[in-house]
Image 1 (cartoon, rainbow, N blue to C red):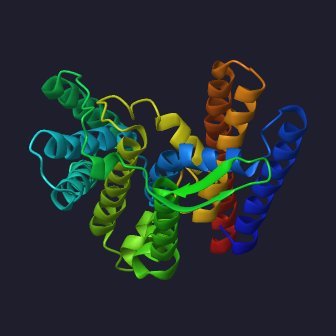
Image 2 (tube, rainbow, N blue to C red):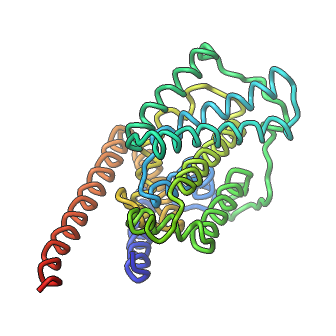
Image 3 (cartoon, rainbow, N blue to C red):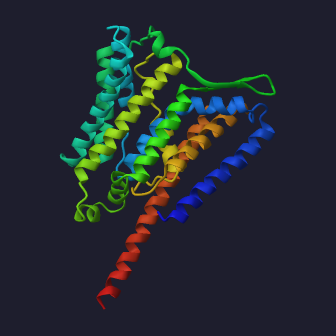
Length: 333
């Protein structure tokens, strides 16, 4: 996507957020306060981390539906090591993160070497990962996590004019760190530029020497890492590990990524756009809750976002193919 168009999409998204925020502030008491906004960001921090990982896979031209199951497996493994084997955090957290990377690598292997379509491969692994987790755990939650994991970590706090205490906590900081790292990788590294190239035109990228297999492992391994990180942060927030806690968040995360401009056909998207997509979904759901609107309406919005995005992607792809067919005879004249 040209830089000008990318920025216009982000500017449009920011404008929608500002208008929606102004409307909700006028009709929903308590919406436009620093405390409510910070709470929103913390609530959606895990989805934001997952969306950043999914964004990298989408840019590479693939799609992954198994990240929520990966997050659940990695979270539960780390929780089991901490609560049942009483291992320290320096062992449990890396073990969970490595498990996420390993599950992502399995997806990359199926997609690159076995040549299974990414959506089919990851739907299958989602089912396998989650079923194995439920089978071996019996669906039992782990509620006795150690204090080093569950204790609330506050980096900054202040009291606003209304007397509410506003806190910048670990989930928010981890979201910022994850966003910064993803942005640097995708915009300032050779691998990031190659991921954009592969997603835009994999055959051309292969011809100029881009290692497609290596990039598949990078993209899906990175999403596995971010999924595991999100799962660990989720357990920190709620103070327990539930096998199916992350299950069902796939559509919300995918919606945030495509709202932020990540194309389902690959090669397009930005980290700021993904963050704006998360903010838009957060304030929309929060505003609807404050207005007493049924939560099912939010699911309608999620479905429409994915449907409209997919429709625009297909129309744009057909338009590009049609222009190429018209230009081909002219080039041969």
